[in-house]
Length: 119
Image 1 (spheres, rainbow, N blue to C red):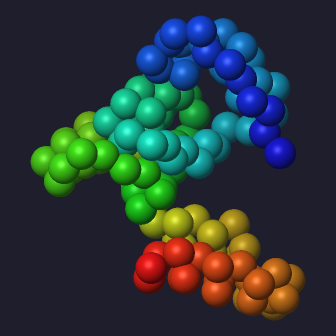
Image 2: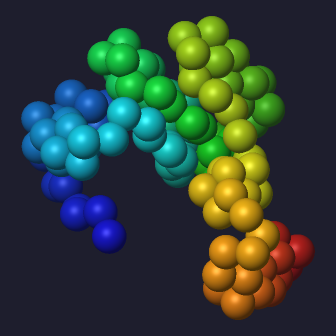
C-alpha cells in the first residue's frame, strides 16, 4: 500500500518534496495516475512526472471533472506531453497480463466493480 503524504497547501502533488521522494523511492519509472479532478489532481502531477522522464498512464474513467470540455482539454494537454490515456479495465488487464493468473481474485473483484459502475 502506498503511504499517505500530507500536503500543506501545494495544489500540484509534484510540488511537494515528500510526495516526489516517496514516488522516486519506489524505483519505478511508470506511474498510473487517477484523481478527483482530472485537470488538476491528475494533470498537474502527470505533466510534472512526464517532464522528469516518467512514463505516465492516466486512468480516464477513474477521474472526474466538472464538464466534458474541461475533461477533453485536460486529456488533450496530457496526451500532447506523452501521457497514455487508458480505462481502468485496460490498466487492470495490462497489469494482470494473463487470464490464467489468479483468476479467483479477478472473479471476486469484477462483481464489485461492475455493481458500482451500473448503480
